[in-house]
Length: 123
Image 1 (spheres, one colour):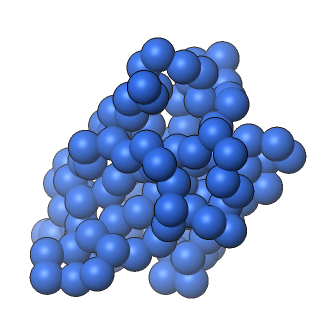
Image 2 (spheres, helix red, strand yellow; image 1 turned 90 degrees about the vertical axis):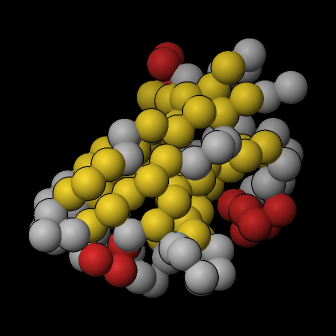
């Protein structure tokens, strides 16, 4: 049973930066495709990013492209989401998701999800 734990959220001013981490317990994330999602209060879940386990290909939602960067450190079994130029509309709970078999094109159906970490962008 893969367990994921997100961390790094908090309160940041508009234009600021945060780095979120998604760490695995029990298994190395090097074997998994990893995606990031977010959900703002009263809003639908929104795909943020995904990184492939095979060739390291990355994918980004249109709303974060150019501002967010996903990366992985397999030795630490951790995936990161570096967020720059944060905007108030980035305020949400951020979740990571992992799947051993499904590729990033099926990221919405990934089988393992973390508990989320809250990001608030406000002055």
